[in-house]
Every structure is written in structure tokens, then in C-alpha cells.
Amino acid sequence: MYSASIKKRKAGREAVQREAVHKGRPREFDIDSALEKALYVFWQHGYEGASLTDLTEAMGISRPSLYAAFGNKEELFRRALDRYAQKGPGAIHAEALAEPTARKVVEHLLRSVAMSLTDPCNPAGCLAVQGALTCSSAAESIKQELCKRRSEGEKNLRQRFDRAKTEGDLGPNADPEALARYVVTITQGMSVQAAGGASRSDLLAVAEMALKAWPG
Image (cartoon, rainbow, N blue to C red; front, side, top):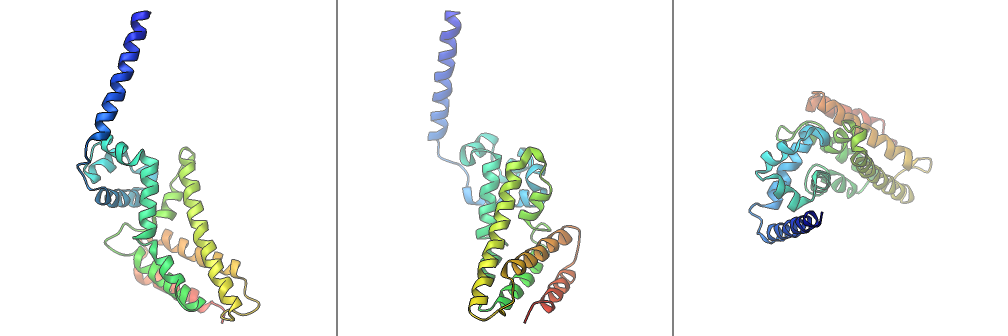
């Protein structure tokens, strides 16, 4: 029993030493490039559909390297989402919000989304929408994260429409909250349609129909 305790402590020290050596090694891959590749795997397969084998093969790294650099699969996915929002198609929202009028915001957003969703260089659909649709109860934290991010996008639109109403760009009877929800519903529907094979002209037609219904 005493011998077993000594062996256990020794094994623990060796594990700590191995971890320290591992942490001290310089990374032999480009984090930014690996994250970009992981993004496309998640985008194509969804969170649960992307296996660790899929990810490590695409990123060109081993599982220990993935864990050392990103922590775990969930954290890697969150980092990929950040990249999607800041440098990928998710950046469309920030660009649209900078337009001078509410109608221009919606026009920019819907047309750019239609173009992005059907870009042959990208997987079909939207990472944030498709990722949530394919999440089971086992990945509830990821589903909640995706819902939270989409809600933030809707909130940003509502705030922009609130400003437009205050400035007189939208009429006094306009409902910024309902308008934001309407636009988000259209964009999410476009994403599902794109994932199902809808063409760019199909989605642009949806965008034009929504713009015709825009107040003012």
C-alpha cells in the first residue's frame, strides 16, 4: 500500500514534468492559419459534426497540439466563431450598421448576406445558424452560445433602428424591435435556404422582396 502511494506520487510528478516540457516547447504551426482551417471545418460540418480527426487533419496538427493551443474543441469553436464574426461573413453586420439610413442598412445586409451565403469559396449557409440547428442536447452550451450571438446581432439592429426613428429616418409608428426581428428572420431563412441549395439569384430575389415591404 505504501509502495503504491509512492508510485502514484511519482507518476504525478512525471505528469507535471511532461506538461511543463510540453508547455515550454515552441509551437510548430501558425495559430492564425490553423484557426482559419478549423473555421471552415466547423462551417461545413457544424460543431458536433466536426470530429477531432477532421479538425486536426485540416489544421495539420496533432491532438495534443490542439489542446495545448486552444484548450478543447468547445474553446476552439468559440475562437472560430470570433474569427467568423470579425474577419469572415459575420463582419457584414458591422459594415451594414454603418450605412446612413435604416433602409440602406437593410439593403446592404440582405444583399451582402445573399452574396456571402452563395460564395463558392465558402461552405453553404451561415456558421452561426447551421451550427445551432445541428446541435443536440449534448452540446447545449454551444447552442446557447450561438443563440446569444444571434441575439446580440438582433439587438444591434434594433438599436440602429431606434436611432433611425429618433432621427426621423423611420416614421413615428415604426417598431424598431419588430423590424429588427423581421430582418433577422429573413437572413436566417436565407441561410437555411442556401444550405438547401438555393442559388444566388434565388436569395437576391428574397432580399428584393423584403426591401419592397420595408416601410417608407
